[in-house]
Image (tube, rainbow, N blue to C red):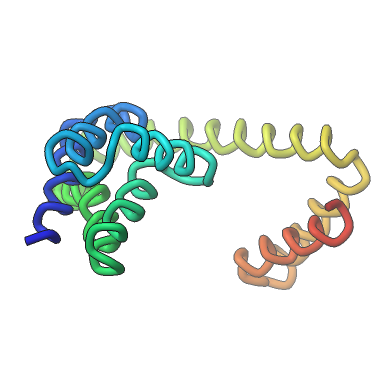
Length: 176
């Protein structure tokens, strides 16, 4: 029964908490504190502070913590799944709908219009990363990482995860 309660406690905020984690925090607080009484308001505040201190989306982190406290590892899995299930269900439904109409001229035109927007957004993101790296480490370190990454990815076809891991190790050893 506890796993069903954990699922409901995090699935409902995931459905009606439009706007992501910050919008669903009061809904999660209502379920966890007031409806099920698993925590006090102060304990919830501490979990919220801890969740905000860690990287990544807040709702799954809180769901994992509360789920673990109430139902162990399986409770954590149920809680995290319940937070992502609404988005997952909607994404599968929309992708199946898009796949169904993939040969439609309107869908093809829509995807052709979206591609430049995505390219611009990725370009802006790359510029922000470059700017941030340049300000933090200087042009020589940034340039070295860009050039080495280019050769590893494009010339030697190294998997991107390995390039990222190598850059992290480089940063920890030489820039940390």
